[in-house]
Length: 336
Image (spheres, rainbow, N blue to C red):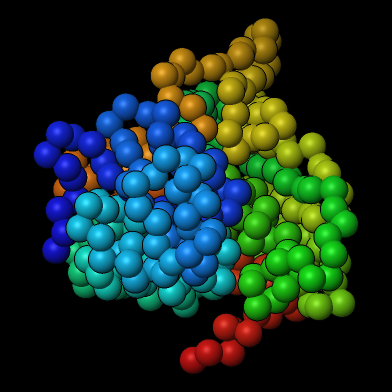
């Protein structure tokens, strides 16, 4: 098995894919101390070379196999479309590489379970790149909720929507690529609700579907036996406020637009002035999740306590349930 940490304490990343999210992650990692992107791979040699030149990355591979075989790569960051997560992350794990895989983790819960099982068999670190969970502001929010700052949680509300429209040939309209609002955007409100309340006991949903059969505008109502509910939505036809609110029996917490990477939140309690909570950190953006990965690798941990694999599996089950309710099926769903 490859070493998972360089002798000088630097985590050496291999980036698999060259799209927008890969560029954002690479830029954030390269601005960190103790981290370095040493290789990039794409199915196109030209794309890999252009990305490497843009970011000053030493090695560019025109296939995934070259990257996962690179002895200088400590961990592979998978930033492909959802439809390729299972194959790309699986290839890296089979090659003995730890993996950070973008969200949504996979196309469905079956694929997610296969990756988790493979990582367990190989004794390798695996984490979904749910950067929201690593945010120090979000972590402070969950601490306050756990300490009873707003009493018993009764409702969670969250939304994430983009204006659109997207052309029929766009990946967001392609069922084979996991198109639709749910996996791209809805994964955030669902993950937010489940961070606070865990896996729901009941799932209801409704959606506007495209002619191709993917969801364009989706509303979800999740219910828990405790009596808590979550009202969530996602859209690729309307730019929503993209805010979140958690309300309990003794107060509420409001997160601003961009709730999944907040700078601060406001705590409201009866009889008190609103309290703004921010957390100072030298890190920004995706650096928080990259730092958590490095910490786990140094400690020899196989999964992160901040982004546990059981939680990622639970979110995928909820997303599967939503798709079942609204009638969205991907070709991979028909695979045994």
